[in-house]
Amino acid sequence: MTWKTEDEAAFEIVEPNAPAMIESIRSVGYTAQSAVADLIDNSISARARNVWITFLWDGNGSFVSITDDGSGMDEDALTQAMRLGSRSPLDDRAPGDLGRFGLGLKTASFSQCRRLTVWTQTRPASPSVRSWDLDYVHETGEWRLLKQAALGPSARSALLKQLDSGTVVVWENLDRLVEGAPVEDERAHLRFLEVAEAVEKHLAMVFHRFLEPPVELTIWMNGQTIVPWDPFLRGESATQQLAEELFSLGDERVLVRPYVLPHHSRLAPDVHQRAAGPGGWNARQGFYIYRNRRLLVPGDWLHLGFQKEEHAKLARIQVDIPTALDSAWQIDVKKSTAKAPGALRDELRRIAKVTRKRATEVYRHRGKVIARSAARNDSFVWSRVVLRGKITYRVNREHPLVRETLNSSNGSGAQVESLIRIIEETVPTPLILLDVSQMPDEEATPFEGASVGEVGDLLRRTYASLRADGLTPARALERLSGIEPFNHYPELIATLEEATA
Image (cartoon, rainbow, N blue to C red; front, side, top):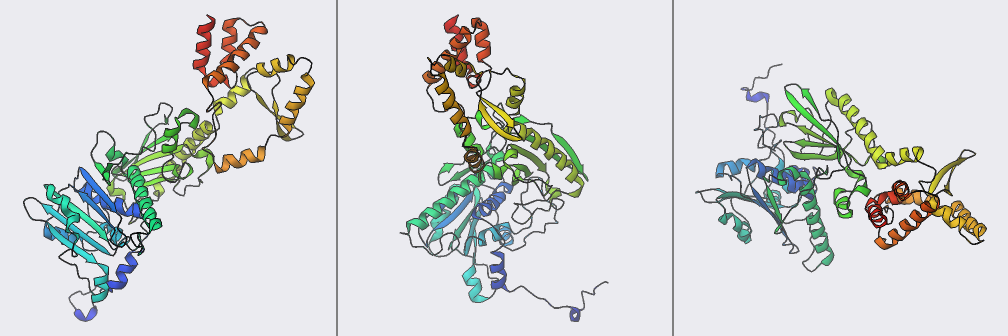
């Protein structure tokens, strides 16, 4: 049916109720982290090299500001930018444009504050300012965009005067972040600081490819530069990059790079802790969807039939998509969720299976399991035994140090044997399983925290035991390198070799 748009009797203009519409927009679902990230998208699109973020606590007078040194806007462009739905998601965008719906500045800001003020300038023009005050919109019932800032906050745009061009976004009346707390409320102050810290971690993750060398962007949080967070630990030699694959979707390309991160025993404690990322290791497994190098989805299995499981936590898969595929991937307003297109689901599922399988092998120390099945009987302290269909664990009497202790007990061998049996029958398996499930990243490595001297003494005793069995020095040292737990200390074995040479 074709409508005759020139016939005014055929239609009526129904504008949205301003107060009701704005309150609805506030509930789109932004967090403070995703809201700030959405504003930084605009800074990157404006070719900013620096972004300065300030979280300032002052009770009800607290504010958040985001300043950039991008290209800025003239007055007409600023008014258009403050319009809800300033651009259609169907419009063609430049390759580096991180925008999508023309809503981000407004919806992100309204989700956190009741007054949004923007100053912007392009040299040599004077700064332009526009402000949305939600209480004023409620009072008037109209979409009245103010051409001035509220009284008193001009100092919050002072940095702009030092820049050739740029933009300052200020959030005031932070009802969602401050909740009306007075300045002396220490708990509210602490919550405010925790939000700032969460924002910093989120930005380090979302924009890490801009913050990494060669640095294209520097983000300052309350005067300190944000350090990028690389989900894939590409600087670690033990990280495995599986085969990358390139897929076509229409005229566009999707690049997929799977990674398997190292087992925690291969990482320094501080590196392992930071690599967990916001939310922890389990939360950060899965596909990482990037749009123009900006991270949209920080770890998700995209409803491909997989769950986030402990044994798959080392699997992280990078996916790069262009802006032109926003619709195909169903990118949402907050740019925080995506859905795999039907044409790619089988391929992505296949890649996920391979990556999860490799990650599971690393997590479960597959190489160590294989070594157990192929090694000599004296290589490991504990043996896995199945008795009448039940799994139990026994101390390996053939381990050199255990065998020496039993043989040199000066007549108390039976007593030592009894002690070992008590230990075997009381292994706290349920407690171990509970700890592994609840604190999977807290498992200590062999002799973690022990002195070098303590480990060295046990190493020398075991070496002496092997020599007493008739092995040559070279053969005893070779055997030591395969005996648990000394196989974790090749440097001490090398030192012993030099001492016995």
